Image 1 (tube, helix red, strand yellow):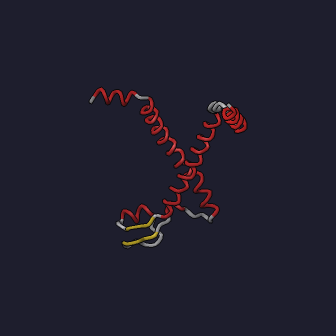
Image 2 (cartoon, helix red, strand yellow):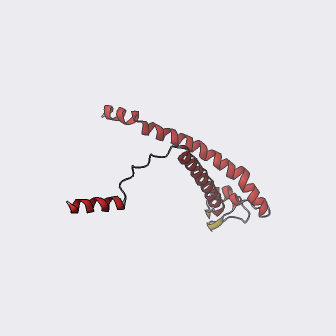
Image 3 (cartoon, rainbow, N blue to C red):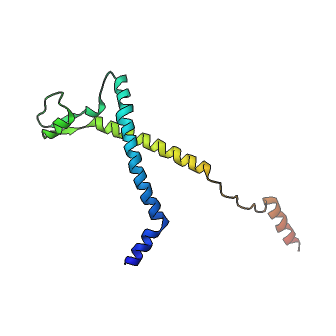
Amino acid sequence: MMSEFKEFIAKGNVLDLAVGVIIGAAFGKIVTSLTDDLIMPVVGKIFGGLDFSSKYIVLSGDVAPGTPLDAARKAGANVLAYGSFITAVINFLIMAFVIFQIVRAANRAMPSAPAAPAGPTEVELLAEIRDSLKK
């Protein structure tokens, strides 16, 4: 079992996947910071100082209006934190767009596969069949 495990770990795909996960986690933090620290404040300013991350609806519990989201959760209120969800969706869209651009650039940078050799044309095949029938 250990030898199989060593063989599995030594494969290039596993190492590539591990590197991808680590880089992806770091990239996720960058995108989260981009969204939370740069994009959402601008969006909030456009909407008149609105802070999306603190927007929620109380589903159950006794929470005074205007209570911050963290305080409402600590007080035991069951909340629907739609502002956090909007921020997470924006994070996802940014990350998906950046990954799309990376894959697109990688596809352009990679040499295209050589074209398959061209086979005989329809006319050539028909001529060959005609000649075979003449014999």
